[in-house]
Length: 419
Image 1 (cartoon, helix red, strand yellow):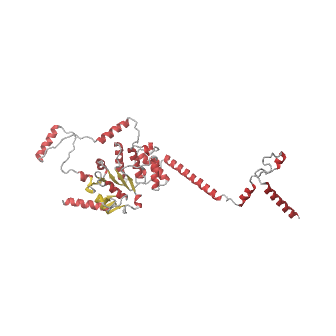
Image 2: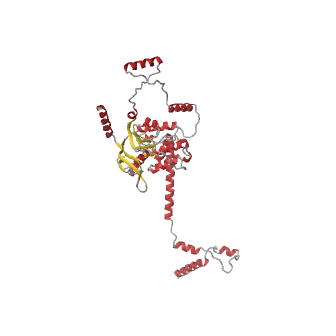
Image 3: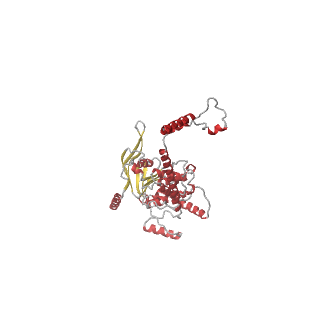
């Protein structure tokens, strides 16, 4: 008993020494109707904390309060009572949003945008510059296996492909806290295995991850610590080893034994411990391992398959070293985009300058308009003029009387100067 208390004290002290990313104390959320009458208490006085660099699992059946807790952390819902801080701030603080990546339970995408345009759009929302968006988009699409369908509209995607794109969208801002609500929903076993490997790798790279899933085996494989909710309350909390340890049995794993050896072991147990072997069975692999083994053998035979491909390596900017230099193709594409963008800016600036420097229509234009106007003879508008007169006659669209008056004024000026 004393050993147990020392263990709990040491674990709590080590937990206090870590930086807390999410801290909830007596967190409660009650939904009310129009008349402010309580209709449901989705979260009922829960206490938990998520430390930096931790993969934290949030488990429970439908209606247990998982999604409500996530929305409270995201600031999408306001708590009824209790305390909740994220990165040391209130969840409604806009500055907190830049540090969070979120994959909702249902993937909502713009149907007519392709994956490249989708990631570029979300990159703009986070204020990323053009080169960074191009680099991260290419790396994320390769990572989730969507490079070959990068220009297909998202509305044509299957649920699994949309899920992959949603995961890439959640990582575009290189978040410090990644919240994944049912990340493997709709994925085939290959995609599920890839997502689990990605979560583990991101955890090793220093990301803090909050994960919810109904697939308990997935949570068991990746989570450092977890809580189990039911009815809005925490029913159990701890690491996988603490929660899953079976204290009533002992498992001995050995190479294949003969029947005689098993009888001898059983007799020894009965003589020394007064117990007998409960069951002897041959170990078997999991269905997931069998499935992956079959697929790998098929790939070795180079059999074709449509849809999303198996993902590549983890994006370089998620590996803890910032944005790595782009490949030559990505750098060339980014350079061309920058040059086109700069050219468009110069053209627009030149057009605005030319428009601003164009002379306004003033008195000089009015004189020209007076000189250039239709002039027809009232007596014979359609008369044919002799050839010699046509040669000396002013054009038909010039007001001859105005020209004559100007010439007469000029002649008088010349005589006056000569006199």
